[in-house]
Length: 199
Image (tube, rainbow, N blue to C red):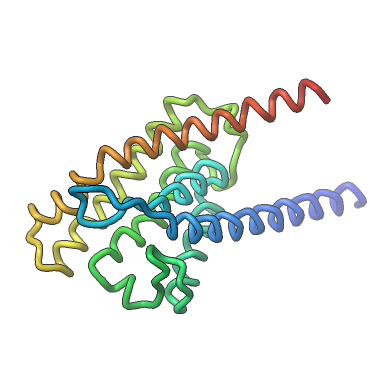
């Protein structure tokens, strides 16, 4: 009986920890959304909020990574200024760029499912870098698959214009963000390995 009780406590502890990480990554995504770099020739500044999506899927898996992005969207929909340029409210989600926000949630779930192959996360040291990269590319494709048609329907652009203005212009930078994400995750793994070896 004591062993069963300990097992229940362990599951409960894991759930609380993962929920805390999900909330933390939702907050991190909100912080990333406020970091933007205006570049010549681009119709909008380059935002960093997709880093939160990538980290949520990679680190937390589909269930908790998806929950993290759901929390981010719910807080923003409630009016908190957590979206790009300190905006918030349902009108942002219903607006021209709302499809990308919905895509964030779906992408986090997809990335987590591809990488972890279960609802709960597994150590990233067990996952090849190529699989992580493929998962991030699939997540980015899903964000575009939802965001571009949404932009075409909710803006003056036709579909071809939405593809150009809402995907092609930003694609090189988004690929760089994937490379940066993989580098940061790998650096974190190496740091943990060195810490464990020195313990």
